[in-house]
Length: 437
Figure 1 (tube, helix red, strand yellow):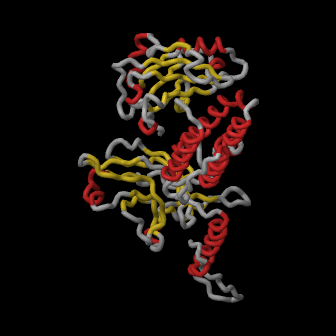
Figure 2 (tube, one colour):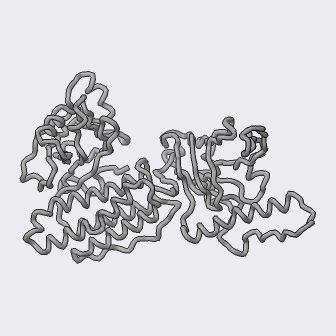
Figure 3 (cartoon, rainbow, N blue to C red):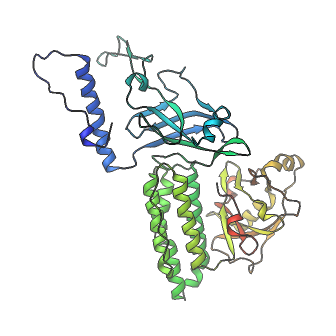
């Protein structure tokens, strides 16, 4: 399939009494498949990527894809494992065996199928039992074609393949390691890193606007600033919360956010072109631009990061830059819940590192000390309560550790709507405060 009209399969000239062969039907089917993809590619230029993607943690030297549903750049719809062949081969690579190739510059793993060779593009061993649609009976086993998916390590994917990247590699300390990477997607779900990055941007803008809203009533400059913070925020949040937004649409909405922030008289930096095959780089640039604008327009002495909720726990990746420093928890109070209920929830919850949580729970202690903060420490936002969280000098976090708030059996209705961490910028450099993914 192609976006070049000159490369589209020509229409078969059918005529009465013509001698038919499989070639006629194959060419007709190829054209029928190619035409919708041609039109879709013009209407949606980034019409490829994963719909569902499940893989192992990128920590060791084994890259394994458990399940994937995707549309390839040439329009082919693929899935793994195939419902037609449960014995399909695993999609995995032993990266340790590929170290010589990685050292030579082949550092991208692609999910791909052969583009040209029909016998290598499809697996012919699959069959499907098909009934007569009229009677629902008389099942007939029909040979069908199943795309032959494979993982290809290369510097650039050869033109003989159709596919897209699913992992980036590097050499560190003489060992092949996987870099943070987000494959191209057709929609941004809540489980993706892009969703978490965009949620962090939206939360920071909303928290900042809420904190300044009271002063905006009598101050024109503050009113313009709050307008710039939230004018494009509702449509951005609506796209994000839908769970089906295309990443390019979300990227444009994020760019609109940056434009509205210029109401404070600061010109936003020009964003680089959107790269569908490197979503992490594209949205990291948006996040950096938002941080830069906020830093230049709003003189804050803190930076906020939102916890991710996981059942009865709230989690956030931490940094040793917090050790011995005063940090704050911001708790958004749900409708119908009193601040006293939230205060009881905070006091009874166990707070500590994820690696230490089993020990804290077994001892039945609440972990890190916390107490209500003074109003002069941090400008309060409407509907939020704040607590100071003490990290003792011996507090240490591994590179992959998380700060965890565990609900010790509290009533579900008393749980916060959102929990954020506030880190004083005066105490830590902004680029060394927290890992955001």
